[in-house]
Length: 287
Image (cartoon, rainbow, N blue to C red):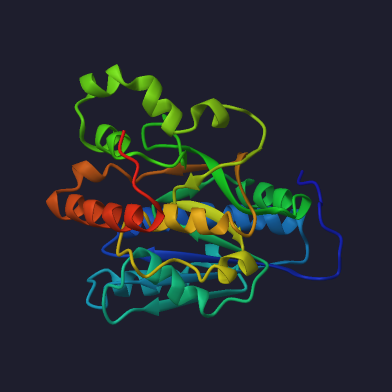
């Protein structure tokens, strides 16, 4: 049984944006199925909750586009949402700017940035909204995450040093093991191994985060300086000027992505380019 948490007559609105680009349609279908279950659970807990989804396709010529359109318009599993919009960009504008295309249309209380390769636990949305309703000073929350293999994925980070990023992204496992305590500190394991919510988080991964929409709009959404990578870290630092960033372990997800170094030279070049922009804006830290 789902405990009813919201009895007000005033509607609460959650908007969700997903940016796709040559994504596996089967993974997207699974992601949306989990999202639908989480939405239904949340609507039982918060009877006045409205949820709208915005899917931004960054590849107009994508051979999967027709399948995505069919999935969004014909899927009976998505009937729990008030609205589902597909926005097709004429060009690939990148990850952050793709989410911004959705943000232009939203007037919600809360906004979820979600990757199409994230599977959400059934009570994830309920837990997120309950926490934000009870903690008005928190502007952004990050969930507990596991990877495809079921191992823990640490989405919260401390401000990175160049050495940390090189170790984590490109060093052999043997070298990483030598610096394990340092990398664990960067991943905030000392804080996020807690079973209770924690504030004071510096930066979070953009694969799944829930924000107060007014805070997100106050900082101008994602920066268009980044095509891919570091736009989430940049946003986290800017959001901290208007509210707390928190880790919320009761909100659980599985994330199938990551591993930049294994995606090829193009992604490595994008990573390095975005890193330079990030450090130039927020300050260089080397070792």
